[in-house]
Image 1: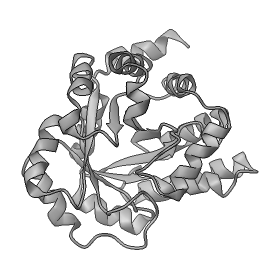
Image 2 (image 1 turned 180 degrees about the vertical axis):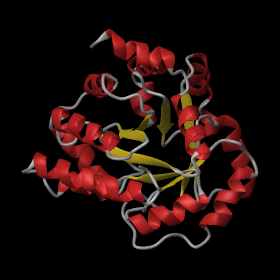
Image 3 (image 1 turned 30 degrees about the horizontal axis):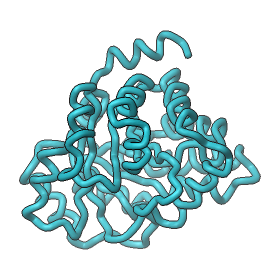
Image 4 (image 1 turned 60 degrees about the vertical axis):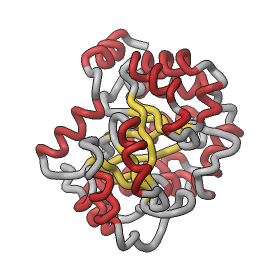
Length: 279
């Protein structure tokens, strides 16, 4: 890896805060794009990430392949399985970030599960993630009440911990989550798992406003957002819009043609970014 990628990391200690500040100044929401790392293989995944970042994605959310992804719908489950079948290891995930850092300074967040962190040693995992250029950890199955050790290690190394608020989260618990979180809050707009949906939740504005009463952190909205109209609506209510399955499907539909997959995912990203007013 070139030394200039390390320089990028050192010069930008809080890329997430800089991104949301810039988006606020420009009067738009951030575009958070999700793909599973190493889907369907390392080299294609690297090209996919570059394509997304060159076509409007502001923050890259990298799914870390896991054998039991409880929060994921079928689209993302299959993406993780493809990556694992291709031989993807934890070393490959970190190497992927290293290589992305050679051409991009965009924030990167790991969308992961706690066993993948815990099994490597919490402090060791955070140190390694920080060293390669990861900005935040969204550890899906780790509630804030049980996250003390991870949060402590993350604060010491200036790693952000993103936590989820769901439609089923009771009002009393929202400040418990927001007081532990850093970087941003991830609001899951639908009950259930990830996946494309035909419509948006009717109470989205009220739910986001309820979260904002307890935190100054940006609030991003994800799960089920798949087209430009939905992105436009969610952007009016939030600080960021997360699209995942609609991007991953561009890969799954074109497994025999990586070139076509890249073309379609770039077109999809451009279309969605356009709904945010991204140049």
